[in-house]
Length: 223
Ligand SMILES: [Zn+2]
Image 1 (cartoon, rainbow, N blue to C red):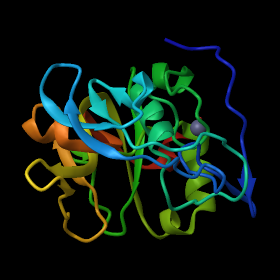
Image 2 (image 1 turned 180 degrees about the horizontal axis):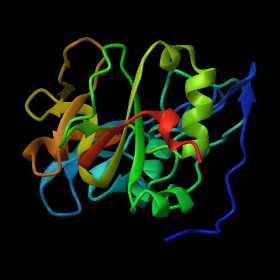
Image 3 (image 1 turned 180 degrees about the vertical axis):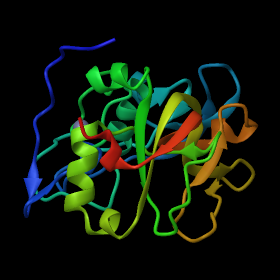
Image 4 (image 1 turned 45 degrees about the vertical axis):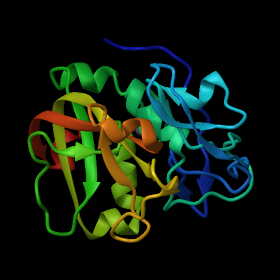
């Protein structure tokens, strides 16, 4: 399957391609108040005081974030929650934002390319949980050349299936109604769609599991 959709605009910052999923400084989070509420499925959980239908997906409350890609300065190390979700849901390249259901996908036997920073060279494991959307071949090659972190070490694989699993986010404690501190500090908690805590989670990333993984060297993918 291939698509002919228009590609999102590309942005560069100091010579580096700015990933589609990177946030920009003008995309500050709008203010919000989280409250205890009845969720769309009738269970109790969290919601926003001024909640809109777009604040939820699969009934799960999502972190708000402004959307103005290309405005201000990019944060190359951070992730825009809504674009990350968009990329995971529609299997868009995390760097250029184009569909990865492209000619390479067809050529690779309908498999997606995933790439991760890994100095140990550990291969992508079967069933591995990830919040990293797939990447297209040209972006993978360009990223490894351009990104100092990826240059130090990366692991790549072709995967047959990217299966939605849950979200990474901030869990609220129903009794004290405070965010539950997560460990290590600053990290997000991983919550499966089947976990009862999902209704108390403010989602910041979509997570999926990888199946049918074949480790590869990016050099081998050159046409
Ligand atoms: Zn790309």
